[in-house]
Amino acid sequence: MELILDFLSNTGFALADYRHLIMIAVGCTFIYLGIAKHYEPLLLVPIGFGILMGNIPVFRGLGLGIYEEGSVLHYLYFGVRQGIYPPLIFLGIGAMTDFSTMLARPKLMLLGAAAQVGIFITFLAALALGFPANEAGSIGIIGGADGPTAIFLSAKLAPELVGPIAIAAYSYMALVPVIQPPIMYLLTTKEERLIRMSDPRPVSKREKIIFPIVGFLLCCLLAPAALPLLGMLFFGNLLKECMVADRLAQTARTALIDIVTILLGVTVGASTQADVFLTAKSVGIFCLGAASFMVATAGGILFAKLMNLFSKDKINPLLGAAGVSAVPDSARVVQLIGNREDPGNYLLMHAMAPNISGVIGSAIAAGVLWSFLL
Amino acid sequence: MYGLSAISAANGWLITAAGITIVFTGLVVLALVLANLEKTLTAWDRRHEMLEKRRRIPKAAPSPEEMAAEKPKAVPTPTTPVVDLSTEQMEVYAYFQWLANRQGETFSLPRLLEQAEKRGIRNPYTHLDLFLRLGLIQELGGTQRGFYRWNPDVVVRSAEEAEVGS
Image 1: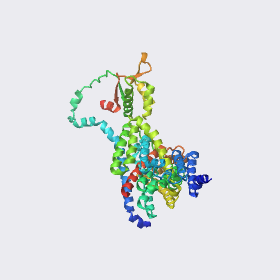
Image 2: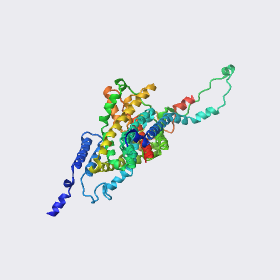
Image 3: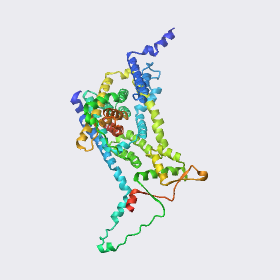
């Protein structure tokens, strides 16, 4: 009888408190959003299940929890703690991304740069609210709307905040269709939303091959701390475009990125153990993350309007919203809003230019923050 | 510490200004390089021509008498058929040749198309159809029916070369 009572007192049912139940509900919500609403399912489903795994209360000392030395999850989490997974994801992103729209109209890259203002304004806001500089930098990068970049930087600057920051970044990325449209309507007029973009010029294969080499050299010579992310991004793209390393490109954009996404999603989810995650700090991170995302969207739109003051060839300012690097969701939202105003206006391919440059911009911003705050 | 004093104490203003400047500088420089990449590549392709132009010593303009005496030269008829392709078509032609050479001297069209699609070559069907119509690709007969080869008797030149030549 005593044995049975002992066993029952060690079950998850006995060890769970209200915080575990809240986190299990959050995990189920993520899984629901991924499966039923199709919001970033490849990320939300693994993260959601990871949250469930991380919030089964376990007896300390058995080597089961993600924060316990020697546990399986602890070893898998090593890739997050040491910033290994994000560059591998960037390799896959590079191998699956076609940069031709950006090469055809490089001036749209400035919108990707403008949207990164959100990162730095949130960094200032976090400092003002009393966060230490390293944590403020990690919170600010949420505005880059790039999950791997956010995880990479917070793993380097504030490893204890990886969980809340990753969850905030991916939640807001999944909620792009909800967060961005009101800001887009607020900051643009109907006439501006109706602006049609001219067709981009065709881009030769040779340009596509030269771009990753030139882009890598320029960006990494300027901000060497962005090397792990941008190096892998451009390397992946070179594999895709060079035509002689098909097998490598194929692996990078399919098996490798899928494996790493699974490991990253599950371990980041599992790192949100209720006792570590449910704190006032996490709430602050979530609020600042949302603000960062909104400021980034507004920054891109306002910069597009500014460019229109000096340019003969007008840009549809909705494209500025795609400067946040949630690829390709923010570009899809731009297409959706533009299409709602004028069903014949196709903005998706144009929006991909600021969208992709946003990825480069946020990686540079992460590198800059890392080098300043480490 | 909170508010503006916290920002100042952590060098927040400086980091923000430097960060925004570096991100903008990086992307602006990259945009400028990309905007000029096409021109640079075109100039590189025409480097021999441009060097030739520079080296050429300008001749004195002929007098009206010399011009009147000058008879129109007979245009030599080419012995081999010449096909003029646009710059884009030339580029695709080169890729197709490279891909076909990986199969050997003779090649299968469906496999070539598959390889071209995999590598993201623009409009592979249209281009291949054009090369067939222009006689650049020949179908083989006999036991090798269904296989193709590049026509060695056709000379291909870019539209730019054709302009210079004319």
